[in-house]
Length: 514
Image (cartoon, rainbow, N blue to C red; front, side, top):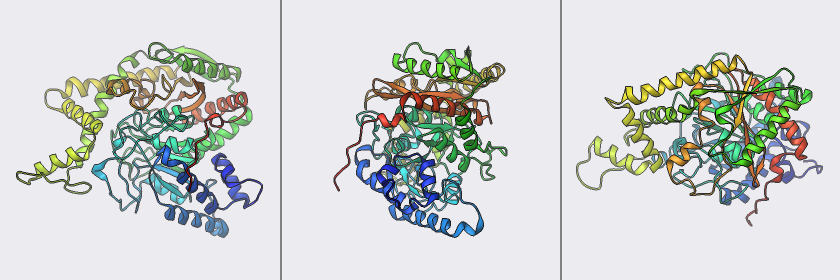
């Protein structure tokens, strides 16, 4: 490796910069991956981003990337990110490596196959550092509901990193990984990105394969990329976004070429003619921190300065979106989690007394294997799907979902993108939202995108009380390119005002003595 840049400095570079260093021969993938593994060893005891790290596998992946680069891969061009390490949320099946969904009911389960998104990472030669923590089965917004550990926010170790993809967000924010995969069911990529000062994208539903991703709510779950910059997120999106015949909901025309759009947008810095709609129902009010709103409106001014026109847009049925989501999601979760019965795979617990039957084993296993939040959602979902309640609750919620989708369709006639704060508040302290309803209400800004199946991005827009604030951009289905165009221009303007990346302002984590 060249002495021009030390490895500790290089792991703080963007993924695109790390890729350039690999391409120039400044560093090898083994050196870069080793440096990230050392960073994990030094700080993850405090952060808790990872549930499982397999250094041998990661280094073997890195060696394969180095060999492919040296051999020219039989004349085939390598992916730009080849050799850059990545972290994967422990909801994605990884062949030969434990996949638990942060639940005791799957503790020790080792899949015999890879999720399609993981296969794409391997084919692109990205070494997988390990599996990141999450709320059990993605049920939560704080990563306090993992069965194994809680993850801390690198900005303040006494605060939550968001959820459910909190482990992936924390790994990226703490420089343990330059890239990560997450999943977004009601904001589980965008909200943790917002509170950790990182970038997260929920692609259009169906454009990133769900095959091999442990299901929570099948009509809502959306895998997506997380990184420290809009360009890095786009580069990862281009790898995992593709049609997959193994996923029956996969779209044949998944948007591609996001990285090229980001580079062009950053070069031009021009949004002339772009129509930006500010969602009136999400533009402040009760429950919104004043600092969050100040940051949001400051970012809006930068969009206007770049040539965009900004106007208020009402989506009148959003007031019912939260209620509809918390009927649809538990119903689908109850159905999906019925497969964990103590019979086929995962945990099996037999009753301490009484007969050992399929029913008693199932009841004992599920009682021991699921945590409180998972049980809460299973019970609620089972109730709303039960005879006599299906039409009143689940059926009515689906009707509200249609109304929300119509609101968005009407808005796209007047605007190109819609914007709002990603979350109404900054990261809260552990235990501060012990009331489940208080935690659920924080999803009010992100849930609508999942109900409508549209793409959304969160990027950092500043600080409030020394903690990151997220700016959310939404676009029509399959118009993911608009997210990246607007996000790239806004990011460039913000970084110019900050004099660099927002993460550079985060407190330094104390490394453990080894």
